[in-house]
Length: 437
Ligand SMILES: *[C@@H]1O[C@H](CO)[C@@H](O)[C@H](O)[C@H]1NC(C)=O
Ligand SMILES: *[C@@H]1O[C@H](CO)[C@@H](O)[C@H](O)[C@H]1NC(C)=O
Ligand SMILES: *[C@@H]1O[C@H](CO)[C@@H](O)[C@H](O)[C@H]1NC(C)=O
Image 1: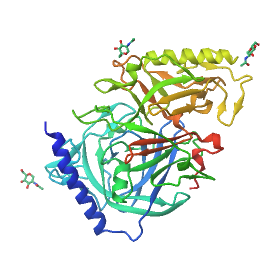
Image 2: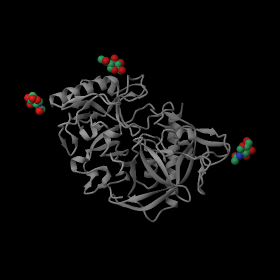
Image 3: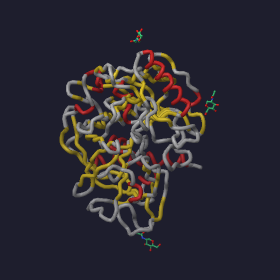
Image 4: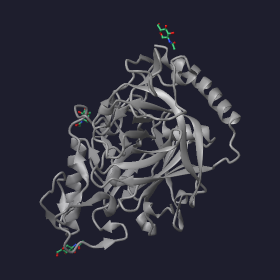
């Protein structure tokens, strides 16, 4: 197939179009960065943002999906906006999404132009289902920032997203009725904002572990001020790697995954290497394997042999530290008694887990990120068994979930193809809830 060449050609068309549009509507104010609060829904453990879309502007609550390809929402029959445009197949924006044309069978509307609409495949990673949706553009508004506090709201007129059938919103935390995808795609939220406001493609994500104090998502350059700390200054970097195979619920052959993978070479517990089948840490078969970061699961999931090795090593080290193991509390298998457990700024003092990264860096994880406090008081190691690969529904061998990245500043820099991570901000006495909204 000539998908590659077609994508390349249309990409240049897209850049031409985008830059022409942004010049002709040049705003007198050019923001350096944008900001939006990220709320944690305590019932579903999903991370929600609210953006303003349409004309007149209306707040739309969406669930964040770090690896999602683009923004989609349920348009239903109540989509009211004077500014939307369905994207026709022949328009250049359509060719940047490799999906192609769809005939839509409903009445003409936001996601449905007469005859031939540009079709995309919106996915809901929480229920692992994809659907068919039409691409459209409309106004999007978001707050600017100097990195210290929110500034004036800025708008873009031609924001590309998709309508999705209401069946796709199942499993989303109300009032969310769509997904804001930040993945590695030209039409993801982060990529479009970077293009439209002429930033380097870069965003900073700081998820709060507290549902009372929202975390923060920055688009564009730092600083990322969390009270007194500029979290953009305390980052360690590791390369972002591209998985050449798609990992969404529906994929197009030859299209790489929109999710963010990093190269983990090993896992240390109390500085001792855990013995792992290192084949699983590579993309060893059709995109299976490797390590990705996901906001679509609340806890890290490990392929079964990695899960067994990590939990066994953790139990061994916990015994050496004289910590008392108690019965597992679903869904977790390894739990400790809180009695007499010492605490520091970074949570309970338990065996320290470290990801050993490709470039010799390590990503240490402390009690606040590794342990989950259960209703009976037990502290459980917050990792789950993903089952055997490649049979499991989980494609990566290690999927780092929400709990493990909370109160860590993460910067996804697509220009430099690297991930910056702060490790626990608690070490500095800060949290992701510290941005002054
Ligand atoms: C849609 O298709 C019909 C039949 O092919 C044609 O008559 C009509 O002009 C088309 N409408 C548009 C907007 O292209
Ligand atoms: C390591 O994992 C791969 C992929 O699942 C498997 O084919 C191989 O047999 C495993 N090696 C060992 C020593 O278990
Ligand atoms: C654990 O307990 C043993 C026996 O009471 C003691 O010798 C050892 O020093 C303790 N280890 C730690 C890390 O506290």
